[in-house]
Length: 192
Image (cartoon, one colour):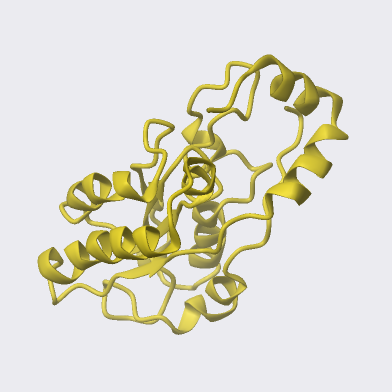
């Protein structure tokens, strides 16, 4: 695909990042990010191979066309006149197309608590819509997975988690089917 369409998520992150206390104990944006969730956060199917493409992740991606949270954090950090914020943003992409529903989140959470991230995104729900996960089931699985953070995270570290809402799939389809390259990819692959 020639272009990426990424909805603006968490405008508050950009607007308020300079007021968030960093792991260094000084104001500033987080210098580490983790992406948890499903294929959307793994950049899956952003080219004709339909493989996971972490560089195209809306969260931790390095592709400038995506304008990921990682790249936005980097821009914010490099705008601060303090050498501590000139270092690269560390990123951990735990999301994968292998993970399809909220029931798969618990495994990612257990791996995430061992990593030194300060800001994490959790994008899921599309697979649950397709699989017919009930609202109650979704809620209880999400609570169980999020409880891992409460039990296992170091209480001395400041960590923040963003759980965005489920995308507008109808709008995505309308936009993507108008792009000839995207249309070819969608027609060539089954999305189970």
